[in-house]
Image (cartoon, rainbow, N blue to C red; front, side, top):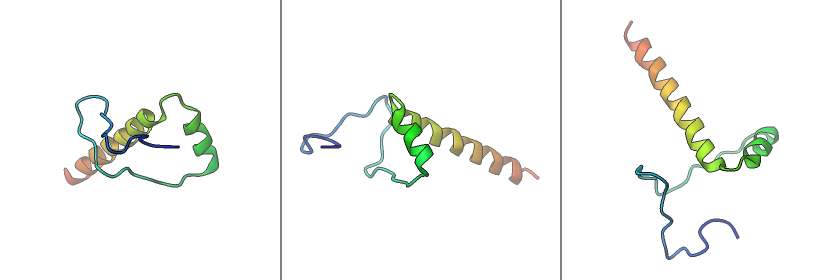
Length: 67
């Protein structure tokens, strides 16, 4: 069984950041899937990877609009 074993109780997220109601889902190539699933805390790793890319994208967009 995956996910919350007791769906009547909400899971408490780590930290103070509010989490979205619906999770993101994306299919990736096998080699990425194997690597990510091998990580001890893949959820946190994925959150950090997405946040880093978002920050990079926003910084690039900001610098483009400065010209």
